[in-house]
Image (cartoon, rainbow over all chains, first blue to last red):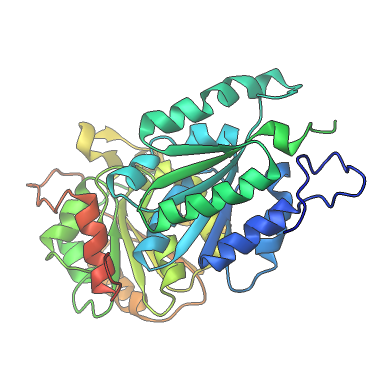
Length: 184
Length: 198
């Protein structure tokens, strides 16, 4: 069993940091995810790069996050699994569109990188950071939070099954503590 | 902005013509009258009707078109619905699916809510926007000859996504109501495409 660092930014001597974006990519590929849509976020940048380099996955750059909720529904109608990547501020853009996923019981997997909750320097990120999980819960999307890289990989593995086998709408909340402070 | 054109074509006749001999066509409809128009033309297992999620139609079409590149996907929606998903035209343009056709039944009004004028009714030209975004085709249809030519060209393979703006009469017709159960509609289309519904 490989040793897993609690915090991959710490670079603790002798412990190999977990390359969690690569692990997430591996988990999503293992589970036959064929479409990925995203509004760019620094926390997702490596996962986005991995998908963009993959000719077997169709990646869609979005102008606003709710587009990805609709694309995911269409992909499922056509027999494909998809994943939607966004920052917490984008959750607010998605709310009405999520009624499509919940009322149609469309499998939905969102990976949400958090802002506004841990060592945040920008006050404008705080309101939506506070509202992210309550807003998702209010529209009927289950949230699963991960605070460490190792926990994140297991959480996404669980979320994939909940979404694509149990027809659930799931948002994995990637904590800002895990992502680290934005360098300004 | 252009001088607003308020249409004269009959929306139900337009949809019936576009769906005649539909073969393997898959159809996604935007909420409100377009869902009723497509249903009135004959319910079909290859139809997915939206009853909400305004702005979703073209993007549900995109996801479906990407998953089924061998099938033509036609989105039938209204001007108000497409205007709410205007950024989606940019997303579709760069995704560039050759098998996606968007038909906007443009009456220049929000018909479901009391016939208030929409942006297209005030001079916004959706075909120009799609053209500027790089759609492979973006046509405004105002008469029966144009409709006939559009119906033919939709059948032909294109190099990218296409948008047809069909100028229809602003009128509220008797509703022709499709099923409202989203789970049923989802499973019906997936079954139609041969996927096992667990």
